[in-house]
Amino acid sequence: MGTDVYLHAEKRNDGSWHYCGELTDLEDRNYQFFAILANVRNPIRSTVPFDYIVQPRGFPDDMSEDLRHDGLLLSGHDPGWVTL
Image (tube, rainbow, N blue to C red; front, side, top):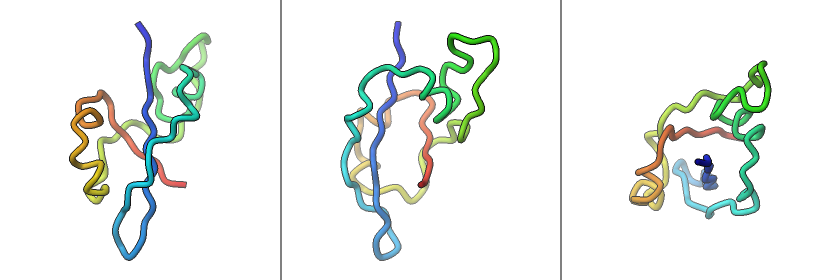
C-alpha cells in the first residue's frame, strides 16, 4: 500500500486566497520528501527520522473557496499546509 501527497497552490491577493491549481510535477512517491514536508511516513528507509517542516494541522480557516468545496481533497487523511 502506498502513500500519496496532493499539493495545491494558492496565492494571496486583496486579503484572500485564490486557487492557482494542483502541482502535478511531484506525482512520484518520494517518501523522503513526504517525511521532510509534513512528517508523513517518518522515518522511512531509516532508523533516524527526518527533520520535518510542519506537522499535519488540518486545513487553514481562510483557504480559497475552490479548495473548500473540493470533496476529493477534503476526504483525505492528515491534511496540512505550509507557506513559502
